[in-house]
Amino acid sequence: MKFVVLADDLTGAIATGSVLCSLIGVGKIITLDFQKVNKELMNSFDCLCVNTGTREKSAVEVRRRLERSLEFFEKKCPYALRIDGLLRGPIKPEIECILEKNDVLLTDTVPEFGRFTESGIVKLTDGFINLVPLATNLRAYGENYGHKFVVADSKTYRDLERLAKVCITRGMVPVDPGPLIAYVAREVMLEQR
Image 1 (cartoon, rainbow, N blue to C red):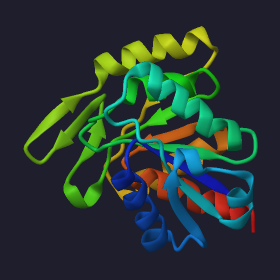
Image 2: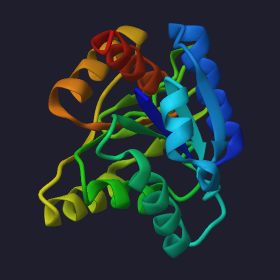
Image 3: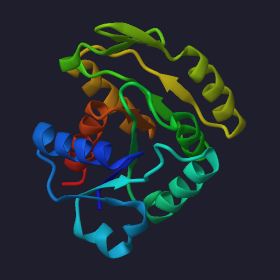
Image 4: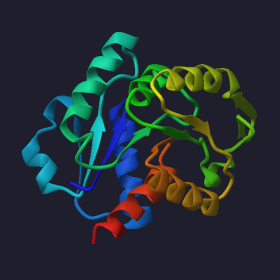
């Protein structure tokens, strides 16, 4: 096992697996539900895209499922959190769970959709999403555990490649709708060859 992606629903897990295959040509990938993660699967694939099934769950259930998923690979390989591009789902409790153990870098940029992140604002083709309140809460939460939460500006694939290198050199967990995760996975795979 070289890399794991956590996603809050099956669609996100499949979409990220597809991005990993098409954008960077990652080797053997499997998408599965969090209950089916086991050591045998971890040794058989280069990348796991795990559906945590938390999109409509309570914060308590989100934490339980993420902790269950993380127990298998947290110390064994790098991982990422795939979020919905419009920030639907339990993003705050998911990131809090990760911040208790790691630094986190979030960006919400998908260049082909005209979506990019700048100064804590996600710019969409027809509006924007303000990440500042969420970022303020998560920064404070992370500080309680000695970890950093960063919302990074990005607009292009080149920006995402640069951020992937930041995640790897600083040991940060990438959080995004998929493109940053793909670049981090590519870097991880190249390092392990």
